[in-house]
Amino acid sequence: MKAVVVGGGIIGTMHAVLAIEAGHEVVHIERDSRPLSASIRNFGLIWVSGRAAGAELEIALRARRLWEVIGSRAAIGFRAQTSLTIAQSEAEFNLMLAAAAMPDAPARGFRVLDRAQVQAHEPVLQGKFLGALECTQDAAVEPNLLLGGLRDYLARHDRYTWRPNFEVVDFYHDETGNHVTDLTGHKVSGDLLVICPGSAQQGFLSEFLEGAPLRRVHLQMGATVPFAANLGHSIADADSMRYYPAFKDLALDTLAPQDPIAAQFKMQLLLVPRLDRSFTIGDTHEYEEPFSHEILEAPYDHLRSVISAIFGAPTPAIERRWSGNYSQFVGDGIYYRRELAPGAVVVTGGGGRGNTISPAIAEETINSWPK
Image (cartoon, rainbow, N blue to C red; front, top):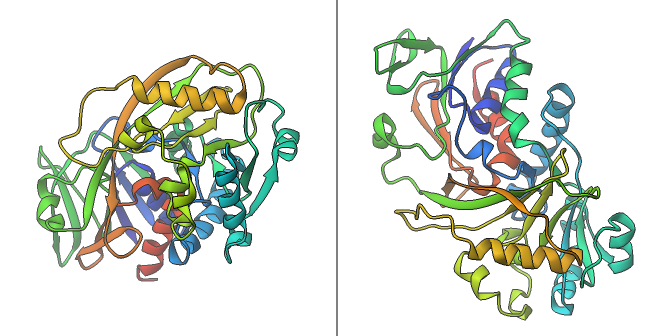
């Protein structure tokens, strides 16, 4: 069958990958010359550790297995990069002990390391900390390689067509299938249609998404110059435990009050080492629109302070900063899916977990198609 996938971000591209592997012909549409939105502006994390217990963790673990397979086939910089969430106080360390005792901790690959064990893994960490929560199921890819690497993999198949610079302005269904058109009236048709718009939910989609439990989230991030020493783990601070739903039932009220800047900007430290030894660092969260256009320095001062405390050394200089938006589903469930017509769906709302679970989202779509 012929499938039309609208959206060149990670959720759309994963639909193209899984559809090709299921034997379908795929036309893959992107409004820009190349994807420019959230999928190239994130950490590249496959972050199992923070996912909510139950269905969300199950889909994340399934996606993690798919990432491993896809990463072995496509040049996307996939690596099974274990994470360390650093405890800088006794209260934080005790909370991590409680996390490691959760019923689903083995599935997440949780274990608590003391300071000596952390330094055995990462001798470069010489700051003030007591230990860390390790998650062996976390991983990473390179955002600057990810989408291009997946399209290069797709291009090996003669059933795949890439159509950039095609901005969809209308959709309709008739007895011949599902159809999308652009401003010039050009039409692309298929038996099946998946629209993955990310945070771009205006235009023809507005009637389908009106009242949907979706919100946009604005975030700021940055990247450092390359670091002198090798770092083999992604690093988080304990503020991430306030943010991620995996830890919501733990005694978070035993933690010291959050730093005022971190609280104001709804921050956590995430630090991801890249293949060139630079670090991607962040991040902030803004939920009320209209979003600010300013990239302020105070959050980066806070991040530098936290990183320096963990490393026991000055933070590498920040080389560049950026911001971006993603779409987050806030209803019951994990992401948003709506049938537009027979064989046509819109899929969005992956939010901060979109990169992590994107292959499993796509798998659920493909499994729902006629065989």
